[in-house]
Image (cartoon, rainbow, N blue to C red; front, side, top):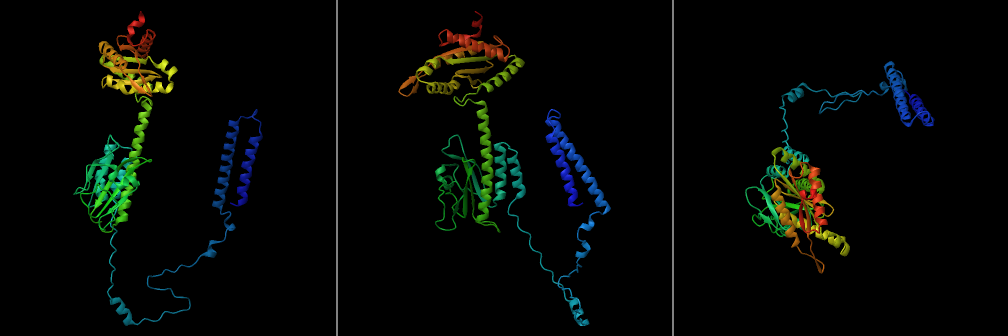
Length: 449
């Protein structure tokens, strides 16, 4: 096919597009115009394909190109050790004795080159990376890392440190190797990699070249690497590797590269896990008080009611409101209100059972879900909360913040048997307590009087 045929097809397609553009929308909608352009292009494409296929089958257009026969070059196979003769030259005659000597000479076989030594266990490392990409639990990934490190670093010993509850010290998660290289607990300042934020090398084979990692005091031989476990500008721990002598074919730079690969991969995994935990916490926690939010409270109450209905057990719910909020808002502003709410959020969990669910329900209102709590248990717990909070004094600037509570109590199945009714009756009882002066507990049956 020639270029002219392609241009004819292109002009025909463009003509269809222009035609669809200038047709008024009163005659055809935009959707119909687009449909027309699509069908028009498909039809022209089919016609162009059919014509081109027929032309190729009939041999049309072959003469438009230079004949391949004019460019065929005769290829002469070359035998190793022989050079093809130029035309007109004759090879010198070989004597019979020369041919015999060449045939009788033994052929020396060159020794096969040794296969390269595998320096990186790709199969084990690939399996570890697959577990990381699957976002497996932290304990499973750490267990796989503990198995793969001895294969990545043969003849070495190492320790993985991670932060515990406090960010002031790192604890040993696991160690490997035939000897100990560091303590079970390490302060961040004891490792130079913490301050530098990069891999440091402690080379004990040459004097004065150690990087200053004072925690490596058990086996000061060979070379030790300390790599920070980091991700998204956050430090999570440290990986320490020590080896007396590098295996054949490996050197310091190669080991530093391996340490970098391991620490970077594991660091990104830990950072991703940390982000997932934070996201989950933010999705179910109130940002000010740290208690569960309203959405989580309603979901939890729905699950508890389903379980209680099935097992015929009670559920208590307490709604509480700080009586000082309006006055505090007017006299000291919203910041003082938020300080009071934060203090209540910190103290409320200590006044309830471990199985209870404390929540910030809405604005300045708190809620406590008490699975398995009957009428008496729920009422007694509400009165305890009321009493304890009335004694609370919070330092704020040069003054003291204190408040009483208005509490409303509803119990399933005494007052309600479904989520909305249970919440509604507890909230109404709380508002009744507030209207009656606050600093009291009102049970839901008081709403009927």
